[in-house]
Length: 438
Image (tube, rainbow, N blue to C red; front, side, top):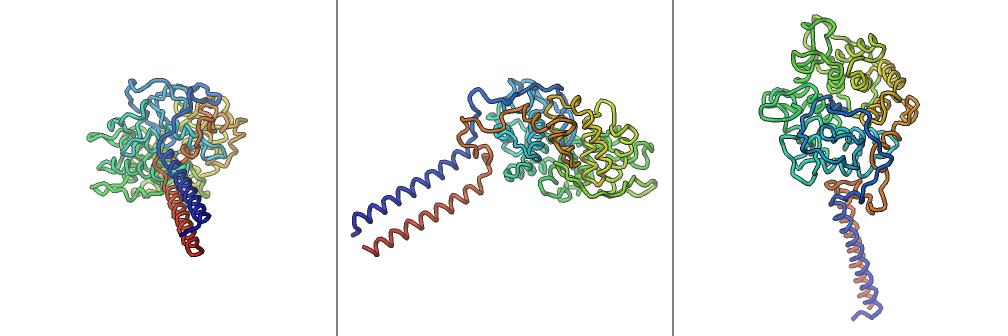
């Protein structure tokens, strides 16, 4: 019969063990449920976008998104930018998160939580959902939005499950010719911008696009290469990529295609310098890498002719995209000249537009420029000012809930199980020792 002292010690150990286990269980349950935003929200000097946007200029592609205006409502306080998010909410949030994550700055926890809440049950994303609690309309899911969200979540390095679900969604939407459509549907037609976006996201997530073969044996890179202007095209267009097979060439689509075929990631990582290699005419159909270099040569020629930028209505978007593509495919000098042009006009071009601020951060990082003094601007600080507070408010009692994400608790659950087993083993050994002593 154990003495009262032994029984007291055993009871105390039991209470301690139960308390710790309950604490671990409560933390896991809290993390599994979305944390509501603080009452009234919290904006860190939020300002309106200087450029109203009806076209998504995704970090992975430039593509129009058609969204029912009935979905729009008050702009969520967790969003970067105050313009109507109906057509670009997910993409601009993803771009801002990706850009901040690439620097020493941190995206706001509520901004991350908002993006997580936008993911559909099947892994895809729409351009924007005013009510994340409502089931997704599969007809509104969007390839460009999904691809950009994958890149943003991958940049945070704690959302592997979410990233994998997004990639699986992309894989399920590949068309027979290997391409992707912006808005997948049974009768959809693939387009280069969406295909380039999908390739870049898949590569960023650590997968190979060459493993994605349609029933006809076509890969995404096969489909994207088919939109390149080759020797049969007018000489000024050779190497560029068209908005559709046989359509007009476009500098932004070309830059996105070069990044994708060159297997560049988002954010873009500078590659060692190599020689410029234009398409050879007459010549055989180029492989993937040569097609990317042919497109890079076209970009370089156009940039030099235009004074290190493209001009025209898509000047900013095309130049930013070209900087990342050229840096990732081995042309740092040409990318550097273009990013210096961007820096010279950054104060005028950026304004308080989160998309432009984030794009400048990514261009600066791709060329090893300092983001806190780029063109005389502290880009991360300005970007953070367009969205929610970068640190949790007092109402956010468990910041880890926002950082880990509802579906990514593998590490936490494993640690909890290990600790529980160790505590139980300690208790059992203590009780056995007490019995022997008594």
